[in-house]
Image (cartoon, rainbow, N blue to C red; front, side, top):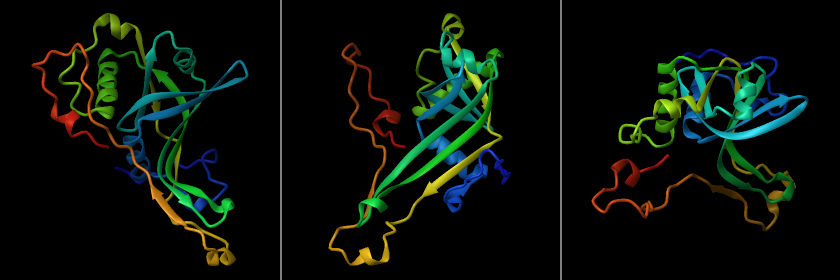
Amino acid sequence: MTKENLQTERTRLSRLPKRGAFDRETIYPILDEAFICHVGFIVDEQPYVIPTGYARIGDDLYLHGSSASRMLRNLALGVDVCVTITLIDGLVMARSAFHHSMNYRSVVILGKAELVEIAEEKKRALEAFSEHVIPGRWAEVRPPTELELKATSVLKLSINEASAKIRTVAPVDDEEDYALDVWAGVLPMRVTAAGPIRDERLAEDVSLPDYVANYKR
């Protein structure tokens, strides 16, 4: 993986720049761990921010949804897009209300998306969506039919202009507040899976796959 700098004037951090990173080695693991991105764009002077799933293949981010989706139809026209991804790693509790914070890893990607029209690339992207969320699932399920493929749009956003911002530290209080008799520290947060719940119509002889039983991020 290249150490190419993806910083531009638009992704330059003006506040707390020391938390910023602009290399693929930092950005890609954040993209690969999260589930949901928020896609920002403007249509007829009206801003929209839509949460959606995504997948990364190499240096490209893929989005998908219904072919009737307003978001995808407008992004396919080449409008400017801003994609954000955030992971919350901990609640940071300081001695003062003002200095409470969160530990997090976030990414912002800017660019223009393009419609994926090559069938093989589209199928590869749909497989990547499935494997991004539940590795091992794609090989077991029924693949999309031609009708389902036609009803689904896939867009590709090249990751060429991006930034990450990361906070990993303990509370930072005003010096005089360290004497206060108030608990301070970090409450770590992480995504965990609970026990699987069988579909009521699942045949009794269908066993639970290992990739579900042992699922973790």
